Length: 441
Ligand SMILES: Cc1ncc(COP(=O)(O)O)c(C=O)c1O
Picture (cartoon, rainbow, N blue to C red):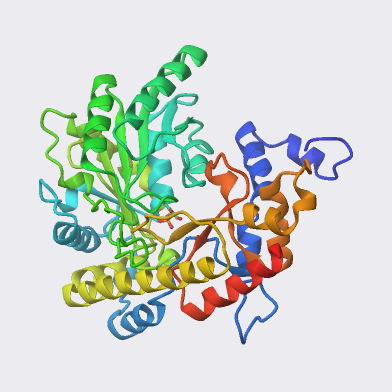
């Protein structure tokens, strides 16, 4: 970038440093192009089939039917209504929904909630409010890749990846690695660590954090007076793993459900949730920050939330859904069953074709698969090539018109691994696997 030979050079030079960073990142980001040409058996048969985006299409028909039957738009929805932090009705609906499903230690009140247009905006808001440019957020590897941009692109804070080596990133022992990473960053840069970012249930590992780990992380954050952010966007997508019968699964416990007495100052604790995953509704763009003891954070968002204002249409749709206990109870239960079935189906195909995959997940929509191993078994002559195996296979998969998330982008240290999203109907997964096998065989 930025060379005289580049026709856009002069335009680029007139950008701010932040704008240039966004341009650089824009060149690297392929996902929007990929999903602009999404495969559909009848309307776009030559398109790209995505099992890379964390989308859950299993109950789309049910949700669309509900919305079209139950939601009415009125003149109020053409105004700014109750302002940019989310309508009073929406915050009330979210609070009663969370009180039913997250077992909060202290009931969630509408005043504890800031609505945002998606959790991505919520993360960015927290990063902007909590960190100065150059200060650090600890994030263990592997991670949800877009956390990096959410945290750092506009707020200009720094993600400090925590290397776990042979330690399970969800185990209590992992907290020692956070400590080491904090000391290393602060010594090297002279800047402070201000927060720990968690994803529980974990994307991409598909597991929940044990209580003992959360306790230690709370104590660690308290000792340094730093914030603890828990992204719980997959909270209700915890399901029965019918494949790994011997595994003991950790149940999901929201950070809202914990009595923080003696562990952490509650003003440092922030939980995120949204409609994108548990309701398979990424397109609504609805997220929430739940912060129960930090009035200043809420005050700051009176101004900041103007830039993450949820559309009145999405606000109204979400309020209607979340108020309807019968609908949401059935939806959540059916969703869990369907995810479980899709997981069993996909892993069955992987087993049949001898593809290694990660075992022991019971949450979220993903399974990690080792396409590199299978590829090198089939193509031993390519074993000593110096090419980056994940990049190479990623391109081969795109040639076969299938998009699978690139493991290295998620902080995986092992080349050849990919993240497959299986929260799709079975024929979709079957077609995806046909294309994946064609690409590597
Ligand atoms: C852990 C996690 N957080 C946030 C997001 C983004 O959520 P939203 O669509 O609400 O911006 C995703 C989407 O994949 C995610 O996996």
